[in-house]
Length: 443
Ligand SMILES: NC(=O)c1ccc[n+]([C@@H]2O[C@H](COP(=O)([O-])OP(=O)(O)OC[C@H]3O[C@@H](n4cnc5c(N)ncnc54)[C@H](O)[C@@H]3O)[C@@H](O)[C@H]2O)c1
Ligand SMILES: N[C@H](CO)Cc1c[nH]c[nH+]1
Ligand SMILES: [Zn+2]
Image 1 (cartoon, helix red, strand yellow):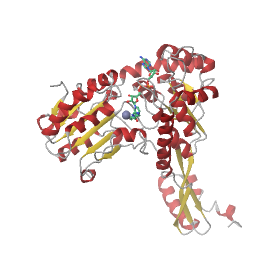
Image 2 (cartoon, helix red, strand yellow):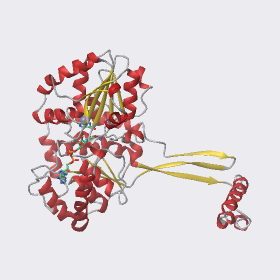
Image 3 (cartoon, rainbow, N blue to C red):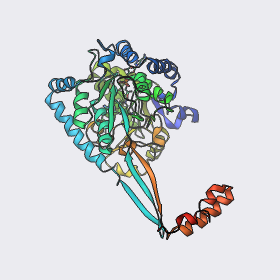
């Protein structure tokens, strides 16, 4: 028997059921308090502060104000260091991610004739500068590099730069450099955490100031984005990974347990629930977890055990699949797997989930790396209003309007009526007799 957290939905009070949706991000007060001085330090001392935080927090040997940006030699060396199989997998993933995101690219502009002679539409243009955060606290993330860089390049952002914590050798993770180069991003800065968000927001001697920052991170990154949201657009909220595995009677609980561990292994601050109406699935999952843990690295088994024996993860027995789907919608997970031989039957019941993976051959792992959809996803109930990272996060939309001589009289008359009602004299004058002399002779 394990000490995995087990809950039976039917036996919970409303307050106990509501508590199940808590994540590590629910209370960020510690990180907000301690990120604030880091931000102030970077704002005041720029590169000197970045180098010092890199040495102190990331234990990055030799990091200095004059080597915060990856050089061409470091990119070249990275290709020598990384196994050919890893380079090929990165390339394969980038191809799928690129082909998926190209489908999201809107037409540069559309115009509709809303009334005879009056045209209105949208124009889409890339944001001029976007910083991409690639985490590296509890592991390296070339996959996040792929997921953030590719849509930015597809969107046509002219100034894309990656910020990622340096390792103990003072350098950027080699596979991250490979992924950046293959995806088409050549600027990589060696800074992470709150200090990286501050560097992108204010700019430093080395780090170019950006209009927006995208990419997931630890609570340090999430807190800094929140504190700086009036200086830099923080994009969608993407913090510690979380998953719900929804399993019905048709699958083995051991499989559900295997997939439950995928996102639970990110860190002790992850969240991971298996929800099922099947007592058999619960028992099989509980029996399988120790076997699965025995096949994991000590660090990752430790992280996932902490999650599944704590308040933010474990196994939930629902009264029915309808009850289980209702829980999923209350939880609004970042990742959802529907483990069933007929997953499409439940798809219509799910309204709140950022990513929905169907069936027994689509584990989160595949979607995290190579399937194509973006694996940077909103966490902590962000799925209630946000979708996955997409090309549109890298673009701005402008409305476009054009009224011709034919359309003008009708639109002007209605505009004048409304402007007079609201008491705006200049608005009314702009479409009244005062305009007419200026329009004479024009078509
Ligand atoms: N939502 C998503 O789409 C998604 C995708 C991938 C990863 N993730 C999540 O991103 C997170 C990555 O976190 P991580 O820790 O691996 O990397 P990270 O780079 O986000 O955080 C590490 C940085 O935090 C800072 N830091 C650490 N301890 C600190 C301290 N005591 N004081 C001040 N700063 C400190 C350091 O600067 C360090 O470089 C994980 O939780 C993972 O689950 C989410
Ligand atoms: N599961 C993460 C998003 O929550 C993405 C990822 C990258 N590598 C491993 N996992
Ligand atoms: Zn993952």
